[in-house]
Length: 471
Image (cartoon, rainbow, N blue to C red; front, side, top):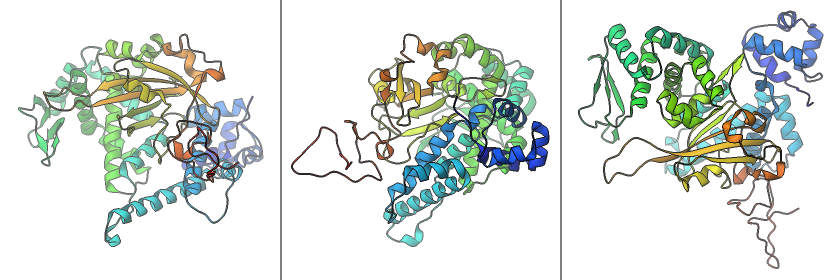
């Protein structure tokens, strides 16, 4: 059994709660010296101590799993080896930094992101004095949700209680939300008379006019989408204080990022209100995480169910830890959440061997793949196309692929594992986080050279592998 060394993460949990080593050791019923050894990675976490820590801090044991280190290691490699450092940094040194000093590793990764953004702004601007280096607010918010494993226990429980109070039963959610808004907040829900354009460019899905106490919804929204917009409005009207308390514990680099995080938390609450945790979790287990059956059962969309599945991380009633992605035809990941340590590359695109791209060629069908990452970790991926809102004749149809992935060890809980060779490593498709950061030098699908490697350029020889590297 692999030993778990997670001293830095345990130390961060303890310090975030203002506890001393003596305080924590007393609660865990261990000696202070033993805890000190654990925090300095000279002794591993035992199963008993790990269970007590999980109960005390309300985190899943997966929080201490090595996949978190794998993600940090990949991002460090991407950050440090992309640039010419005037020297070499070995993989062993990067791994030591990722495991032994994760806070420092995250700081290095953050500095590199700012450096790259500065270069991008300078390149786009004739006058470099006008360039700013604020981080992409959407990326800040993705990292914020990643740190919380895409689960906010207080919001989930508040939403569950509200759903029970207003009688939001399956098939009756939209009506219950409408009545709740009208009776409690005197907010009317009305259809937009026409598609309203905001800022002369964007057609609005919804518009809340506070002075009128009216929530306008676009005619293009399906029933489930209308319910989601109403639930989000309930979150903003009723859970503002709780949302602000969660945000106060974080540091955002811009007001835009903070506002996006506020909206993201309101959306999280909305999903939990429409699909209350305990009820949805039981159905997910009963249907073996069949996304289409769950969507039919609850009367919501495929994407809504897939995203909700990625948030089921309640201690004692945890669902499968999923990675959720939404990808367009150009390969852009427009939405991603993760309850695991799966690493998304920030440069060089994503892997063309990933079944996400195969799904575009099989619209409406569920495509299943066992994929192996370069570090040996295997995942079961489920992908299917979805078409966003109805459009008028002549308007382009917006098609995305929704991907949901989990580690193979969780796959037997999924209906999609039926008939799949989960135990055969040779049956897994070798994919990577992206060509620039992938170590698979013999991949014939490589679209860019790997960072930190010297190309083998020889006019007397050629290979079937693009961008061959020196041994």
